[in-house]
Image (tube, rainbow, N blue to C red; front, side, top):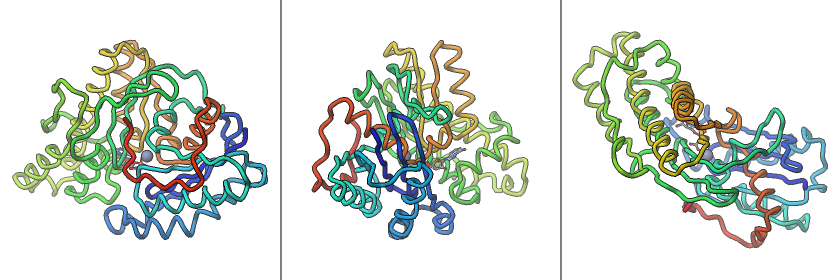
Length: 339
Ligand code: KG4
Ligand code: ZN
């Protein structure tokens, strides 16, 4: 089956083409530079950018896949959750496209697509070897722990009760005076710092549930900087601070994921979302999985962050497994949460 996927839930405009689980093209136009000026995503600007970029991105995706758009057999698009005006751009385009072609539309939950992205191997271009797992989704807007019992069969175990992990990276980085998005910058500086220099709280790490909380950690960093303004005068001290904050976030994510995987008796742990680009998270998750004999699958970097290939691949799996097409007149579902 030849499918097009469209993703516009936040600040990345993505169009991909997949055939039989194989990625033929996966084009993403990122708006990070535009939003960095404002220290965060501005929904109105994101929407205008999607409107401007979607058709050029689609043309590029079709050209790279060496297909004619008229050959597409189904159109998958992010229906939610996300920024409502941004979702509208991609979803309306998908509706129109599917309608004009007379082909099925399939509305996709963005988080459900993240759940399956670790199983797409872009080099081999194939969705394969799926097994049940505990999956961590960590991005700027979400922190979710999910039990993926089988294909298209999952149960959310826990989520953040306040800030998302990426939001915590970005907000604490802002306190330290780093540019948006702060996560990658903090990761870079942390490489030269001592993660044990300062002991920051690990919120909810021992709570008997699978939820997360990160706003207290951000507040702890705020008070730390108020009480130790001298830290900002030294590059080495800033690196130590970044390393210590990063260690606190990563400890919570890794420990709670491993604990859930042990409890549920799965043999595999997966992770996706922008924060999984973090080098300490990748390394610590690898260590913990090795120690506990879990297979670890982290989505490839290009598939960790928002992209349309994961939308198209999940759309194809759903159609193959008999999920009915989405009515052509369906609306977006901006707060569609996984259950
Ligand atoms: O999934 P994503 O690209 O977009 C959404 O939020 O949907 O994730 C972006 C988030 C930002 O908060 C960014 O700071 C964080 O991922 N991030 C990182 C790293 N790279 C991206 N956080 C920590 N370390 C990184 N290397
Ligand atoms: Zn995402």
